Length: 410
Image (cartoon, rainbow, N blue to C red; front, side, top):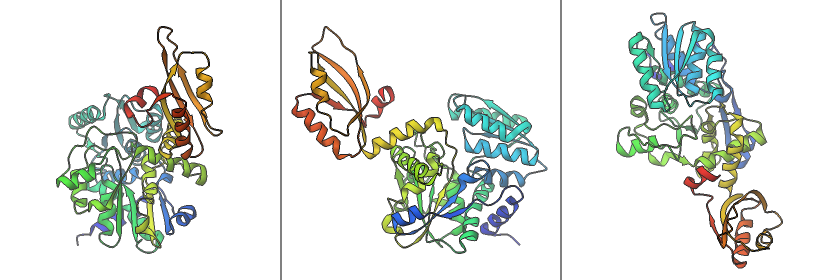
């Protein structure tokens, strides 16, 4: 008798118990009080590789072992670590292709999870180059290529997240909020629950591949993308995953700016002690966008991963402050006369702190340009400060939201 998709996902979930325990489903009091709802977090950041990706890798590999003893993948992060972990578990050879530009921490963790069973090859400056090399090698070696999302067995494996939610909650939640990248997790979860619950799919603003596919009626390439939310920044959603998501309404898709997500990362770390990567924070931050839909309801947010490199923390804090309106950068045109700097400093308020000041004096000019960064404790302080600067007769240009300039000077 042919099994249904839900039955296969449940079977995958049960098989996984020989490898790792179910990730916790935890009610979050902070978020529940904040949004007037019953908010639960599915903590995929607490899996052995700190993301859900090992689920799909496990399910796809178990379907072809022992006939296949060599696996290949291309990834710059979570998928690579999931494949490596499962190669060691199944004691099979794996070759993981990663871009040369991959942070050393991710390369090191992939090697650690795979041990002697996995070889990491650093190839190409961009992922497309890495993928092409991986597929060429795979074909020549007669190995099995493990797609990060566009594979039926991978989708089925990711659906084990939904199977665990149902088992742990004891009922179907009113709404599930989850991130979308290539679509493996969202397609699996949507296929498992069908129309039994409502969904909110969350994409980073710089990589809207699902929304673009819904509008076009087929997957389309939305390059160039912003890769900051690396766990969900995919230029083109998968063909198979889109087939399972094509009936999604655009009203059920939320887009969040990369800077905005950073505020959630900082809050969850400082207040809850939960470490989330940018993609893992998408579902939590989306709650503020769908508040009318969640009031009084039971809502599950999938925290998809916690592979966060703490070397990125200063950048994340910086982005969060800029989005919250607590930090600004501007270029000041400062007259080259004695006392001009003193006059400018008198325009600052009691809570306005200079965090950056770069001034190049050029004696042949009447004015010099100064790059200034200001941090304050209330957004309204900036309106008052800029008014005082205007009244003092200074000329300036606010570059806080100029992404091109920010790449060079911020």
